[in-house]
Length: 136
Length: 131
Image (tube, rainbow over all chains, first blue to last red; front, side, top):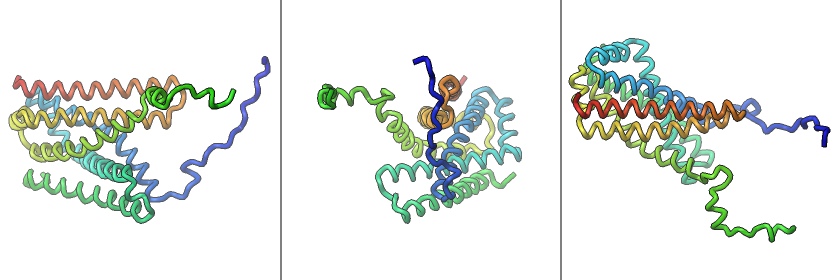
C-alpha cells in the first residue's frame, strides 16, 4: 500500500493537429470563436444602453467612438460575428433534426453559412449607410 | 454478486437522478431554446439599431424608452446573456481541466453575465421611467 506506482503513459486520442483541416472543422472552430467574441462584445451593447440612459454627453462619447474608424471596424466585426454565429446556430438546429448530415448536405450548409454571413453583413451595412445618408 | 441483483432501482428512479451532472439534458436544451429565441430577437435588435444610426440622444431615448422597443431589448438581453453563459461554460469545460481555475473561470463567467444583464436592464428601466 505504501508504494505508489508511476503514472502510466496512456495513449491520447487524436486531436486537431492530427487531422487534415476540413471546411466543416474550420467552421466549427469559427463558430466557437465568434461565440466567444460576441460574449465580450456585449460590453459594447451595455455601453450603448448606459450611455443612452446617462445623458447627452455620455451618448455623444459613445457616438464618437462608434463612428470612428476603429469603432466602425469593431462594429463591422461584431455584425459579421453575430450573423455568422446566428447562421451557424441555425445550421446546428438543422443538424439536430438529423437533416443535412450527409457529405453533400453538410458541405452545402457550411458554404451557405460562410457566404450567407458575408452577404447579410454587407446588406445590413449598406442599409445602414442608406439610412444615415452616406458613409460619413 | 451478479449484475442482475445490483439493478434494484427502476428505470424511472435512475432517470430522476438526471445522470452524473445531476442536470440531465437541461444545458443542451436551454442552449437550443435560447438559440431559437435569439434568432427572432436578434433580427428585431438589428432593425432597432439601424433605425437609431446617427440619431441624436433625444431621439434614441424616445425610441429605446417606448414600451415595445424596451420589451424587445430586455427580452434580447435575457435570452442572449443566458445563451452566452451556457456557451462560455462549454468552452471553459473544454480547455480548463484543473478544478480550481475551472471553478474560478465559471464563477467569473457567471458574474460577468449577471453584471451585463443587470446593467442593461437597469439602463432600459431608467429610459422607460423617463428620468
